[in-house]
Image (cartoon, rainbow, N blue to C red):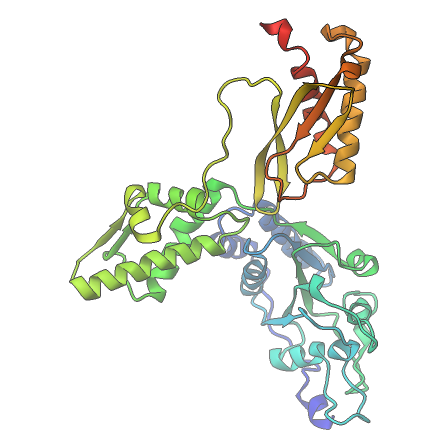
Length: 405
């Protein structure tokens, strides 16, 4: 315990840089896009400069995997001139991991926060609390409850670790947290953080990230010079469209790495000077295309309407279909629809009945006919109230077929 107290940085500060121009340059060098994030970070720096470093805001970067949450935090530390320490919270389920053990226990040690301060050797590092949404709780206590004091600048000036038993000042530390989803983060903890959303990258952003960062990085990792390999623009677009489907760029980087390895093999084995990858020879190196583009019908189809669905890797087109059969007014719903979406379908049918006159639909149509509503990709569960307009359109589309013939 005495050694731990001695090693902790009680008053050693690293000189903080408030140079906004330099910070902007570093952020633009390290990351393409992410305009909102960069703007918020520069605002943060400006406020810290005005308040002489007294502003205590805890930023939480939330977004899907591979969009650059951890690397943005690294860039912020570099632009501030602070020491960077990362604490991974994934799988932590014991309060003592944050707050330390009491010395009466065998194998007692300090908590992750004090350990990070010892590693940083300064009183004002940037500490990244990674994957804050992956913490659990068990009979030994809730670690997210122990973090409440750490992530509150009104309280963390006297953070007490059970192991060192002396209040420690964390108010000079800049805490940044990351999370894939905020659903599992407890409300009191979320209340202490300012959430900045990092959404998925667009096709064009992925192209620029590959061109400016990923290709150079993978060339270096595989011992290639820029003169030995060329990945054409159309090949990069094909990698994005046909070989990866993700929010971030991790799989894109893996595919570029795969091309680099294949180029290295050809250069070493066959003595080739340069390997060029184009869209038309990618299949030879990476096999068949893994993802085909969404099939969007190019002409109007009666009884079929394209809906839009949100996924963690971007948006997809989701067609909905209706078939009208002679029957007794039953409604059949197929395609892994959840309860809310089934309700939407029934509401859509009722709405269409209420406006039947307006569209020239027979009054007794819904008594003499059966409706079969189907959402393709039956293995994928679909739920949510947002398909109401799409469902209403398909219901009106089929019965009014005769009006357009």
